[in-house]
Image 1 (cartoon, rainbow, N blue to C red):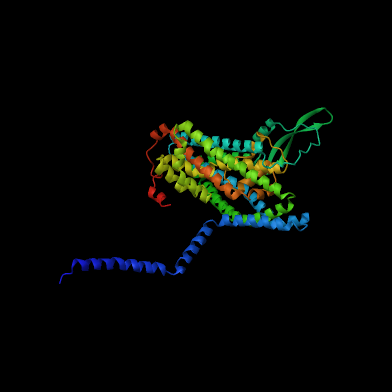
Image 2: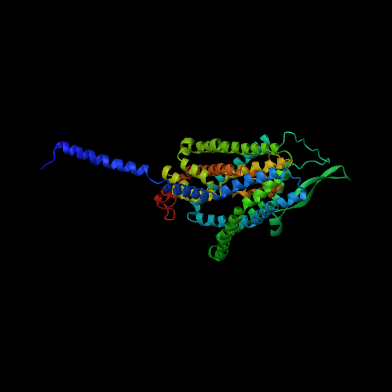
Amino acid sequence: MMPSLNDLSELDSVEVTEPQETQTYVKCNKPSGHVSPQNASNVVAFLMRNAFVVFTLAAVALGIGTGFALRHINMSAKDVKYLTFPGEILMRLLQMLVLPLIISITLKYQIHMYYISSVDMMAFGKIVLKAFSYYMVTTFIATFTGIALAVHIQPGKSSWTASVPSSGNAEAVQTVDSFLDIIRCVLKYSLETQLFQCKIYGTYNVYSRNDTVPGPGTLDGVNILGLLFFSVAFGLILGRMENEAKPLRDFFDCLNKSIMHLVNIVIWYSPVGLFFLLAGQIVKVTDSEEIGRRVFMYALTVTTGLLIHSLLTLPLIYFIVTRKNPFRFMLGLLQALTTAFGTSSSSAALPITLYCMEGIHNMNKQVTRFMLPIGATMNMDGAALYEAVAALFIAQINNMDFNLVASTGAAGIPQAGMVSMILVLDSAGLPTEDISLLMIVDWILDRLRTTTNVLGDCVGVSVVQHLSTKELQHSSPADTSFEEDSSQMRTL
């Protein structure tokens, strides 16, 4: 017996309605316990990925709170010294790493640069020259921008602090003396003085004659410029010696890896040191509102400089060279820039940056695979600007006068971070314990300057490729070492 149409319609209605009622019932009666562990695991995973940021922010908050709580106790200078001792250990650890870090990084990249350029010495050598010329120009512009803003805004100057008159009538050190000191620091008599001493010239009164004469002297501390000069020259020589220098090249490569591991360990100790440094600084501060205003003005100065460099300087360079819309170019980099801001690491954002430049903007892989990894560690426009402002900010807090030109010797150090900030302060002869004030807002400024660094790397790739059209045409076709499956980057 065949079913009628009415029976079929009733059957269809039952079949359609049944699953819907069952599905609704299941959704309504799903135990909430199945959702909560998943949310908890997501929170734990987020905290694990951002553990260092969380620890740093917690250390900053607890350090400030502890400092204000201890202000009600009349602590002696000795007690404050004891309180800041763990922070002093952090500063000494960072200063201990400066010398081996600079040597290992500089030698590694100089040797690496020799092997890259040996692929096609003439054509690729020109690309290397253009790339490093771009790095130097943009870093100088970023440094000059930061110094100009810091000198003009003066974030570390108090509104009530009066200038202290000099106790003598000797002439101030001229700008030309600062430049001559830089040259003297580059060329030294021996390796020992190359590393640890730098001769400086000043003026003093000679009472037997009514005249001022320059007097030489040495200043204890790491001579950064001389150290860089020696490391660059030594690295180039090792690169040219090929097989004879292989043991030394392997040694310095291993040294670089071990030093970076050691830096990582010290950096993880930094929240503990920052807690005690901040607590001690807050206890010593006589006017907390004034120091808060200074730190706010410092953050505003750095942010303004980064915006000027990212939205004015770099787009202008891109437009002048390529004659294309820079903001449309930046729109294609949105994924890389957001990744850089979220991770606060140029190296972590490197796979996404490669995908944006090669997959979206169709850049030549020979240029991207050379410039982006090198730029992620060496092209630090945002860091140069930040460190220039930070050095002048600390100098202004301590009532030390730095003019616009003489300040350029204290900025532009590669490898941004706390270690390089110690390096800059040591080079300028500034107190390193004041770095704790910078760490109050460093968690957001670090992300902003990393985004600026990545944008500068991408603009550099586009500029160098536009200027190297002939070299890329005459060079060998896409090398197998440069060819990777782009789908790997899409999955990252």
